[in-house]
View 1: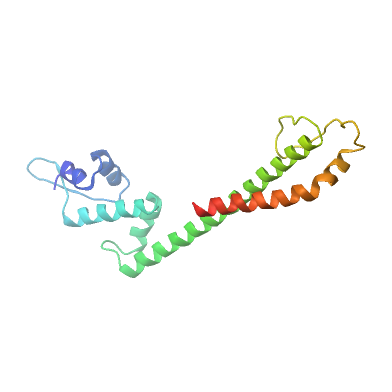
View 2: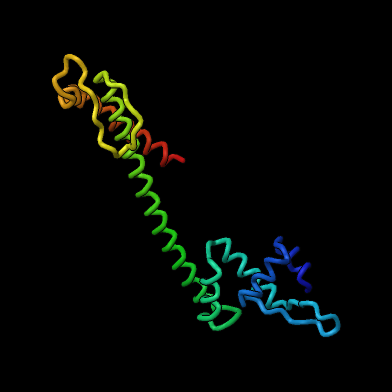
Length: 175
C-alpha cells in the first residue's frame, strides 16, 4: 500500500505518516521498481495501533517505550493492557488534581462574593481588587468598626454562603 492510500485509509495526512516514520515507529519498505514507500500489512496494523493509542492520550515517547519494551510488534495483549491500566491511573490522578483545583476556585469565588456583599451591606462601595488581597475600607457612619458590621450580618451571610456553595457544587457535578 502506498503512503497516500494509507493516509486516506486512516483519515490522516501523508505528513503524519512520514512523521511516524521519522519517530522510528513505522518502517515502510521500498518498491524496487519506482522507489516509493510501500506499507505491508504489519505496518498498516502498527499505524492503526499508534493512532488509536494517541486518541487515548498516549504520547510519541510513550509509544516508543511501549514498542521497545513490548518485544516488537505485534505486542502481547497482557503488555498492552498493563500500559493502558497505567495510563488510566495517570488520568484518574489528573482528574483528582483538576477537581481539587476546581473546588478551591469555587471556594475563592464564594469568599470574594461574600466579601463584596459584606461591604455593600456595610454601606461601602466595593473596589476592584484581587480576591485574595486584604480589603481596607472607610468606616460608614453609625458603625464603630467594620468588624461589628460583619458580625451583624455574619449569620445571614454564612447561611447564604453555604447555600450558594452547595448550589454551585451541585450545578458543577450535574454537568
